[in-house]
Amino acid sequence: MSDSLIRGSSSPPHSPRGSVNLTRRQLLAGAGAAALLLEQRGLHAQATASAAVVFSHTTVVNADAVQHDVALAVEGDKIVAIGPTDAILETYPQAEVYDGRGKALLPGLINCHAHLAATLARGFNEDFGFPNSYRLAIRPRSLLSEEESTLMAVMGALESIRGGVTTVVEYTGGIGSSAAALADTGLRWVFAESVRDIENGAGPLSAESLARSEAPRFSARLRDEGLQSAHDLFESWHGARQGRISVFPTTALAEDSSPELLHAVRDFAEKNDLGYTIHLAQSTWEVEYMLRHHGLRPSEYLAKHDFLGPRLFAAHCRYVDDSEIALLGRSGTIISHQAHMAANRGVIPPISALRAAGCPIAQGTDNNTNDMLETMRIALVTERIQRDDVTPGSQPQPEDMLADAVQGGARAVRQEALLGSLEVGKKADLIVLDTQRAHLVPAGRILSAWINNGQPSDIESVLVDGQFIMRDRKILTVDEPSLIAEADKVGRRIWSQVEAASPVTVPRLPRS
Ligand SMILES: [Zn+2]
Image 1 (tube, rainbow, N blue to C red):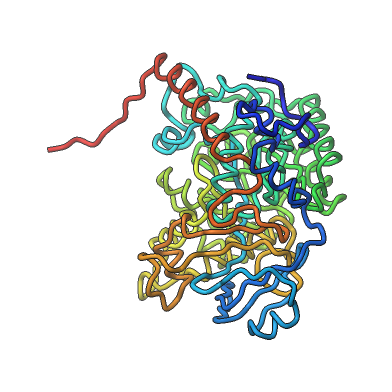
Image 2: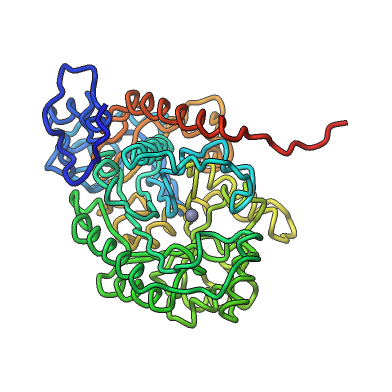
């Protein structure tokens, strides 16, 4: 088994056709049987001049309107027509017809905040607060090779596709090592290369690390190296794969960022017309640390150093006070809301207040899960719980959640003109829902039925840039079964080592 890294080109070094023992490297390079089949059909290159596809007699669902019994035509990478089926089939007589009866088409979901390699800690990282308070003798991630980390990230990408996600913001450092494998999945990506320049800090604060904390010391060397990595990634990947790939510069955490780093990231983004992101107000310990060492709350620190603004999508904002909410709203900062992960950590961020202050809301999954349907559902119910409405449970609506996930997401990734709705002229990034399922029939409002009761497995096909990347529930871009088998093997090896060193015991509730 090759342990060599995957860098640069996605092309397999040689054709493994006929071979059943693909190496992990070949699998990650998209050299599986499915990918070969695609190449044979000439579909591997994205957005080539392909024949039109017409989804006939179907339902087209947007956040602001639903059209019944229409056809939607895709040609190349764009939606070229929506209207009566007969008229559209007359206009596109050569088109391949996808029978849209009993289906609903939705805009592809946009996940604005993912750390895909964290799939390794599924079933562990959800249940011990933030930051994870469980003390393992060995950190699972420390046992992953770079290639295995890519494999874990690809698991997250596969889950994303199956869950109707078409754009993912992958937020981590060193994305270059997995960029080709991620690009090969066919998804639309924003690679948010994370930079930090603190010397005497180590990630999100806990009660213990706050107690031990000293005034931050920042390193020009760390800053320069991190910014150089972001710049290199930008040079090699921004605009690649017919524009499917974007690269944003970003900082990791408010408490790990010097004023110089904040300015450099913002300047980089402005110069190249990019967005940028940060983790903000994730814990009370973060707030306490910023007050102690900077004399400012986290959002105030960012405001002081000109980091807030409409290019920023700030993740979490769980512990922002009224003055910070006003500051974020005035600056037009977008909030990336990870409702699922926040709820796991026992928190409901003040999303209604942030909305009211003027912040656009986008959504993301964060660690472990990449299921945006579940994220929309938890965002819906937690915001309802938090609001003080006369009729509890009437706001927000599922339409608001889809608007956050697709329109808010498109705004965060700065592709509003191309993504976020099914409209003529926009990119054909869309998902096909099978509505003929026991939990969806009958459904007066299919969007409500799906967000309240649906399952990712209702999604039967996914298009990105006009290309099917999943069709009839089969992923077409990579060899999914082999990759899952490989990831399972790696995960079992790592967790058996971790549990041998320190078995996980959980703090159960007392039972009478
Ligand atoms: Zn995060």
